[in-house]
Image (cartoon, rainbow, N blue to C red; front, side, top):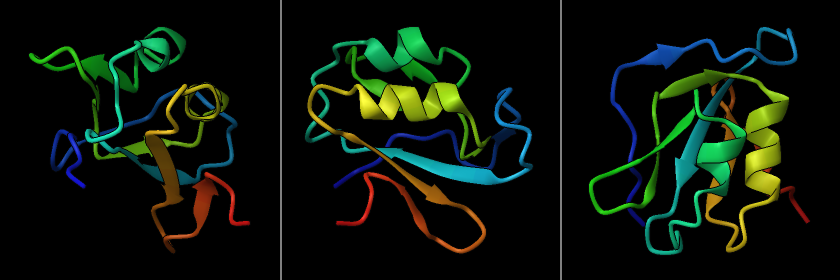
Length: 94
């Protein structure tokens, strides 16, 4: 799995106000470029030159918009972990 992300950057996307930081990853082997994540959370996601979604920043503030984008990805290519401890936010542990 390869992950597209802008290294060394952090962006405080407006979110839940919890102060928690997330590490968001997109599996480019699964991503089909539907663009739902870019529409739902444009501060967090963008298209790369190949028209695949990628994460704009290495760390993001916890956000309902980012979680909504992950939950609605048609191929479940987006994963979210808490940056501090690696705990999985999405997809949920089963």
